[in-house]
Image (cartoon, rainbow, N blue to C red; front, side):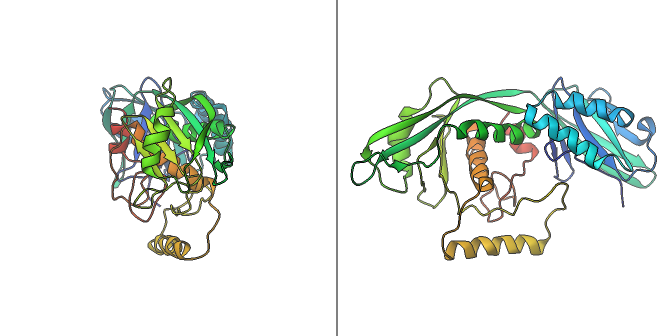
Length: 333
């Protein structure tokens, strides 16, 4: 097997792009594994500009390095980092600590040993903190009872912020802080699903002005083109359907896992098409998290969509949680 760079943990700022990308926090460090190397000499086997990067081989002190790295993240991730390191170890691998010296700069790092080469790009980004609030909307049913609206309650907000930090903090150095999570009651009949026009007219005026962004849940939501979430960048507001079952995602798998084959991708697309024509199915947290992360991506500064399969901001049929450097750069402008 050829030498290559890979993630030391599923959520560690490593992106499976071509070439692979590591996000390193400015004035912090990133960790990455170099696998399938029998012997490794950092002085002779790595090619990089030392005015751009500081690179250390921390294989011999991996436990200490992982613990130091984990301190920069929420407690829920710290234990995962340690457990993953212990479980997978560093068999035939080197663990590298990488620090970027130039803010918002893309640097090249290459492993070269004879004819064997493995490239890595290192993107150094600043820490960005974002305050976020959630509003859980209820409104009248046809009998003027306050029984229509979201099935979620404000206690969900902390779990959603934990997910956003698990996803965005290692991958893009963006950390979310929960500002508030409150119920809202509308003494009017709005029907179901909620429309984008209703979101604009009734919900956005109820946003939390003390937070940078506010996310609304109001039961079922659809746009005119049948999407399950919407956002308004200038208002700093988004709405997510309680059950975004139309956004079919490949199943979550154990880590580390291989990239999907063409046949798997085709099967996922086929299952999504069949699901749209069969009896309703139950949505999952994974689908809810994907729709939330996608709409938050718009509020962070990504306008429009792209056509990259499995990208978090894609409009193709094959959706997933992948990021790339242009997206990360856009949310740090």
